[in-house]
Image 1 (cartoon, rainbow, N blue to C red):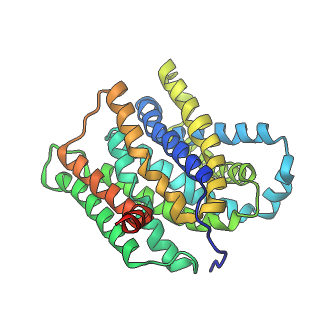
Image 2: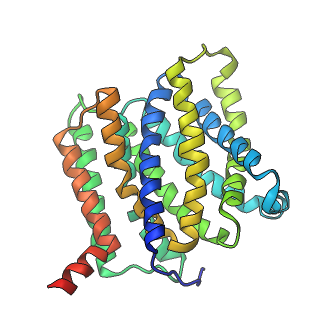
Length: 305
């Protein structure tokens, strides 16, 4: 159980949340480009391994990195599994069948799962009637998006649509579990979990994908991997843990409100993607649920009424 009080995010923290949303929206675009040529397990390894290397080079052992790794390695293994290995693998497998925008919308259910999980596992982020309404709206939006795959053989496979939702549940557990790293510098926390994640996914990639047998990816796929690992992972997790330390799991998870629009714009502009009416309806319902979870907009409206 966690009892540390959560303060309302400052304007600067909200700016970081906005930036992180844009960066993570780009991750779905990069992943869609790369996964067309690189198998998911190997892509997960490249994303995590290059990001871990970048952070180790950045830190140069500073902030007591190696001592922290020795002391907290078990926690980093759990966090790396929940926040990296499981969700990235599920999203990448899903994106072999669905586009960047659709995957991002489905993954936007993360705050709903975070609220439910935090309510159960923490003492400072309890479920309120407004948050419950937000969860219901968000879940309903997810169901609307999954529905066509159940009733129509021409839609994307149900398993591909379900994987980003399962990834969102994993992120929900990660957001709550990650609160224990508040006392550590954000880059150390990011480097620790990425290092653990890389070591976990490496043997999986070697055994299943045998990457040495794969053809050399195209330039666009290589650039997508670099964007995915260095921008959307190394730098993004630095921001993530910095925000999490001050804003709490639920507020941090609201970053997903900004992820779908950026992913959709990139997918439409560069990949020729388009969304079905049910996808747009589902996105609006999820977005409404996130607004209810945040509560600030409704509070302002009541104050100005």
